[in-house]
Image (cartoon, rainbow, N blue to C red; front, top):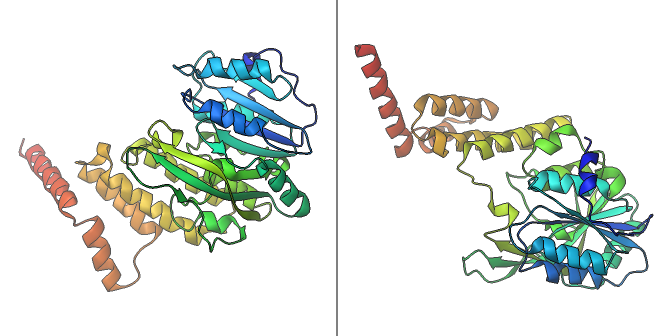
Length: 342
């Protein structure tokens, strides 16, 4: 993957370290209200090594780009900023900045999240230096809900979080999530060789963590050192689980992970793929299309068929004989009858 043509979007004047220990891949879009808090927390880190901040500002319609320019001018020895003249989309913006990182270790953060411990980077660097077999490490983080739900803040990781995690831990069920993006530090040598399919996956976190975990276990630090804002404008809120394109991309992602791991986790991934094919039956585009529903039901069933008669009964009742699917079937049969009466 060659993203070098985006290098010309570099804001002039940066003099970042030539051999940083850590690179911070900082992605931002429409974060005018948050980005100062995020950047200040990075610049206040207490460390005994050099680090760089690679910013990708994705042509925000608000004042985010102006703030990025302000910080880049003020901290040219730390910040290397790309100001996009047009919106690239979160994935391309991220991958370009990610591949530009030169540090031994890489941290990824989005402009609406922030770190709460000035020793965060130092703690994680010390951990990885002391555990050379680890591909990455992560720490606990707090979720702040700004999505209108009114939910109280909560910690992502529970007290019984395993100290080490591997590939299978990310494949227990679909959308498994227990690592805040800003809480992860990874070894660049294991992360930069990204496969082609990674670019085409809408989600980046789960595929990247599996790619890392295949190289070595991921360690856990129980300290709470960052905040993850769950808000309506966040990148994670742009996906719609009832859109066929979204579900289709998830099927592609998990199938690609399955191939990448040489089908070692096929027993875990097959039920996930089954769940997504069943979701395709109920997405907006296929709501009344019985023929498509039948096709996706068949694909799902072949992936992971029920084992007992009791399981078959419950499976059929839930996924094929539900009122909404029966209604779609009746509509389809009515149209079919009309067609043959012509």
